[in-house]
Image (cartoon, rainbow, N blue to C red; front, side, top):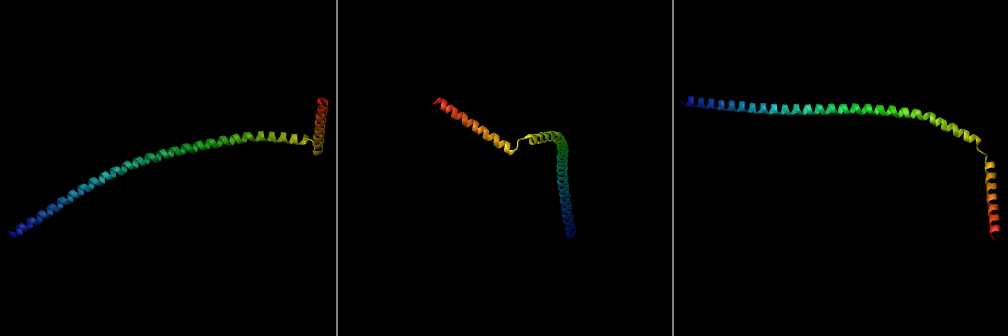
Length: 125
């Protein structure tokens, strides 16, 4: 009877261990499923965020390309204007007086102003 009772106790212990293992396996399975659900949700959120960022990046690249094209077009339109300005400056440089003429004009202007001041001071005294 002692053997039967021990066997029964061993069977009860084995049954308890088996039930504990089954319960542990169920809890681990539920935890794994919950973790998988969270990871899947995070993956969806991450995928959506990546898709949004890729769309924004594509938009920014297109805007930059359009901006560069516009700036290049504007720079190309400035070239003829600069050529006209430089051509006019060249014309002005050709027609300007020499240093000798500039000094003579300055001296004559100073002399005439000095004579006018002298005449006005003599008249007013």
